[in-house]
Image (tube, rainbow, N blue to C red; front, side, top):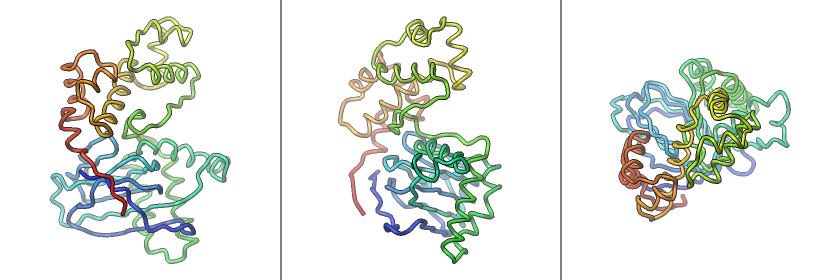
Length: 291
């Protein structure tokens, strides 16, 4: 695949670019871009959606928010046989920094959602159906002010939904870890700095000032994941990024990312990513293009 750095139609004074289209196939290559994007598709069961190191086959409806300029993404035809796919792509250029309007209380949920979406954020069907009329009707709003107002309503409703999940791993998307718990954040930061080394439960628990058994329960309670699974996923994210961005051998990358056994790395990578490290690299073979 060639990863295209897309130059969008938005200029410095624009806020929204809305592309509402019906089509039979997905043929746009994998790409990234500087502006934010909300992408909706319906009647597209069997399409493969790739966002960073996440690869999933979607159902009839899909809605994803991407707010990182470095996160490549694509919707591929794969096994989709639909004759009438409906896709609405909304690209937007807004200052969503914490110092601006979106850092204020009424917009706080949108700000938090945008931070999550740096890894790609996928919404559940219930949320999609909730905002469906607003999304499919957006291109019909001719007045720019009211179009932005309607889009803001879409973002707000999505920011309040339950069940949205991130797609790419933090390490692949180059996103700093965040947590409500200072203890968990302290341990995550330590793991991020020392993921290449052997990490022992006793050592990590002592950083949090807890016993190993208590820390294991505490970590899962605050993150929803076992500590070992978190470490493996973090290492795999770094490994996937190395496979995409460097020419280092698979063996070299596996040891660089904390795996001391190549066959074990290959097995875990295939289980988590759905393909071998070599195949993953082939799929992401890239040439940077500016269009």
